[in-house]
Image (cartoon, rainbow, N blue to C red; front, side, top):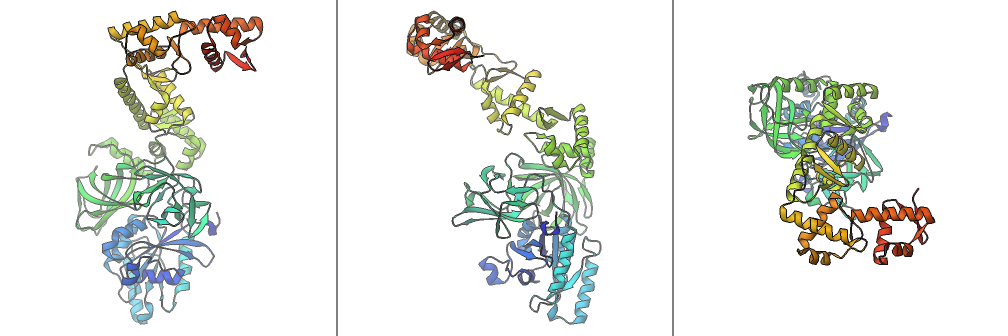
Length: 635
């Protein structure tokens, strides 16, 4: 990839009134303060965005964040997609409270690259500027920015702006490329409507690629749409890739249905979670430690959610310590393994720590459980087997090896060896061309068994549940071919029985009471004796002496048992009659070469009313095929 094609996001940070927005305006010509209230008050309240062209011609996105403590949650919504920080410190004030908190947040989010801009340098003398520069350098010791360039600038006079651009260009050059082969994920930070287009969302594309026309699922609500139009830096594009500031036009959803904190993704790939395992680190300067079950505010992507922290390997976390935790949330959000997050105390709201997501969909654990802690340590270290399982655990529809190799960033041969090992350890299951994590596979089977059990309870006279209805009940994420392979495996394992288009639990059978048995036998007798001229339903009811609902129920039982065969409408034949007629048709065509409707009518002694549907049935089961006005044998 050419350096000019690399997509990078620069995010501002710093105390209120230190000149972040003014600096961005000077660098880009765009005022990131888009709200009328912001422009009137001269203070950034919400996220602002601009595009910056570096000296080498590369275009990067800029996210401008509010500096005031009251709007820190808005700052956090924009910080999650940042690659390079532009830390803004006013030369006349130096280090201030939000300077410290913003830098802490960026450290927790693992932003390693940045540049420091000393703004308003035109209003201080050289001696004061040097004192502030020394103070900033000391402040940055032990942080990812300790070697970052410090550039004195003035947005008013233009002093230092070219040096700042050169420093930003250097920082951008060292940013690693984002994962573009993974499924796309776009945390929403803004929603609005556009005349003639409809609903538009914006955000930083944190992984993958999204193309015009791609289907889009908006999570957690599960709304369905598609990417009708895409813009990057205000320009229409066919494809947006990870690291871009993106605007996507989503037809079929209303602005009121969407909100900051939601995520756009391919349908069926990600599932919202209300509990995830993580490694959590508390800031050395945190106001207090963290107790088990403490109530916190979680910031992940653009979402803010209240929850509780379960400490898994410690009684209490103290400032500067780290440990394994499970975060249980009041509302669902979308999380992926490796995502970084920040936590603040519930009240008063103070930033105290952050961490990395290890298991996005976690069951409840016992505390101090050695196997749980060992597994989380493996996930943290990037154990290849656990990494593969973690990816599969996020795939309710399974994943083929090619996609899994891309997601895990593994050589296909190495992946094949790992999958073979996981299968031998019964941690992964191979169905057709797809792999499932064992827990996903077991959950799929449990849900299928539960759905079938419920169906049998509600429909005790039905031989089974239609296959497509079961597939839909399971979420419809399994392609038809894969679903058939799954059903075959369950049948082999003795979980289900397949009968035509129906599925039933292995232990289930239709059980008729004495009255129902007598009625079923009577209906069968009527249709066996009717032969090639079965009576209509109302006549069957009269002859059986039973109401239509009861007769229909018994006919359905006999159909599913294979005793009766249904043709068009309510035309029912006994299976023995169908078999006899099939043999008659086969023998006659073998002797004469073909068979017309009239000949068949005369042979059976019936009428055209019955002869035509019967021949069409034999066509459908591929005994015969129509050639002009006659039938010939298939094959």
